[in-house]
Image 1 (cartoon, rainbow, N blue to C red):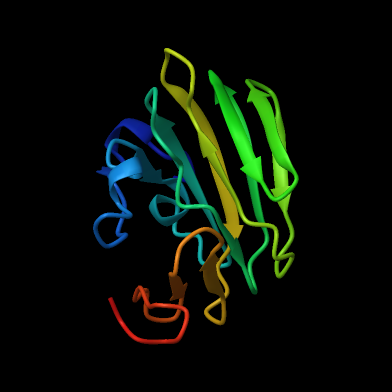
Image 2 (spheres, rainbow, N blue to C red):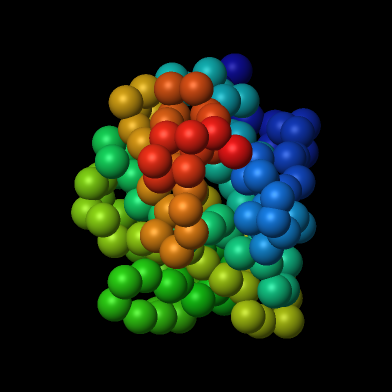
Length: 150
């Protein structure tokens, strides 16, 4: 049956970032809805971000388009050009290889809920804008920008 039982999809708390870069994202919860539905060409994640939490380190993708759609609450999108408030019903799109690092922070007093949608290119490399870190999607390792592992 194509209907996904969202309550049955396991939530993963935190991120895979190495310390200390994992700390701002420690309380986020991701449910991989695309995986639960057997999707392979693109991913869809249901994200819950508590007050004070970060969605990720500020980053951009070399070979993956990304879109976020806010379902509940309020987030502050931070990118190269500054900050933008996103509220329920708002969305933002990030074309691949833009070099425009982005992430969201929940500065409100309530949990924010949003969808994160992206292609699943095995050739994608995620580059962090503010720290010395990158991650090739093919193997998921976290590397310094010179290629040495964490």
